[in-house]
Length: 96
Image (cartoon, rainbow, N blue to C red; front, side, top):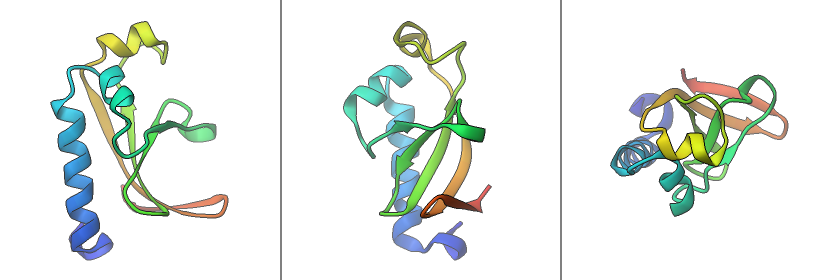
């Protein structure tokens, strides 16, 4: 990952993953707004993007029934999908 992203970005990815792991639930992580998590659409509709840098996002998918607040409050596991670099409306998977 360090070769693809660089040292600073790799540290930020690890920090974001640790922040998610330290949260009691995914709902709590969203409320903290660390990395400005935001829901995605299209082929990543079940996932969230978490900011690493201006155009790098960590893509995670909460492992729960749906994205309602009640479900996210119970959600204690996520799947890390990878790191994406956004170019306008295009995305390039750097770390799948």
